[in-house]
Image (tube, rainbow, N blue to C red; front, side, top):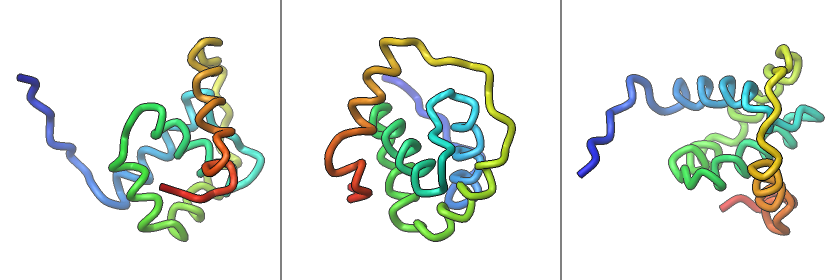
Length: 103
């Protein structure tokens, strides 16, 4: 039986931290706010994190603004594993997701 830790933050505070840390994964598409959110959702979908996806869906305008602030953040030098990145691309370019039809 696994014991899941209760997060210290939740809601929009957690989302802002999550979006910022996503910048360091090497998966973020920084060509625009919408693209940043698409790549974030694809990553969270790949990780099966429905809480994060629902937070973005429920607070899209706020998440869009947060993503806009992160576009100019320093790029990470981390490059994802090729195999994992290929899997991520399949989620990112999935028909409904790429057209921003969120879950």
